[in-house]
Each structure stands twice: as C-alpha cells, then as structure tokens.
Amino acid sequence: MIRAVDGAGGFATVLARGERDAGTILLVCCENGKQYRTYERMPQLDGSRRWTLTKVQDAEKPDEFQEYLDRRKRQDGDLWIVELDIADAERFID
Image (cartoon, rainbow, N blue to C red; front, side, top):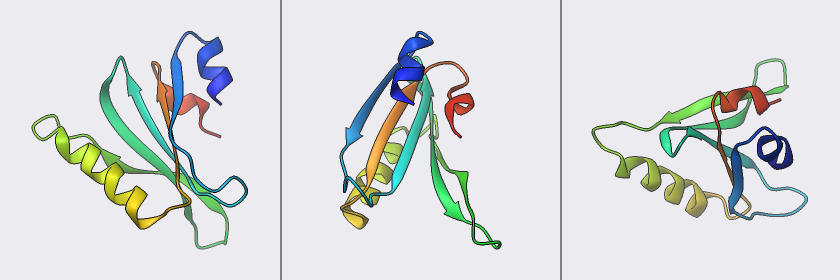
C-alpha cells in the first residue's frame, strides 16, 4: 500500500509499528496534511472484517484527532498506524 501511494505521487509512512505478525492496522488518510480520517478493519456479523471509517478530524478541534491516535496506541500495543497522504486515499484501501 505504501509503495502504491508513493508510486501514485502521494506520501505514505508508518507512524507506529506494532506486532509484525498479529498487529492490527489503523489507516490515517489525508490530503496535503488536511482532512484527517481513520479506517480500521472491524468485525462484521458474517464473521468477515471490513474497513470502516472510525474517526474524522474536527476542524474546530484538530488536537482531538492526535489524542485519538495516542489513545488507540495505548489501548493496543500491537497496533500499526499507517498514514496515506494523497487525494482520494480510500482508493488504496482493499
């Protein structure tokens, strides 16, 4: 995913490294460092896991977004956080 975003002219980076084989992935999507939103794979009723929007940055309270990421890291030491900074970043989520 990081290579695909880089290849499409965007920027992608790992913000937090979790457990190599079992860590959960949280994706942070933005465009030019604005309009942050997070996606996580959430369990569905049929047992599958689907990427779900879990947090959107509030323009009036931008610090709350970083606080959310910090809280998620504290809750899950195995968590990977990957940032995708490119227009329509959701197209890289599969």
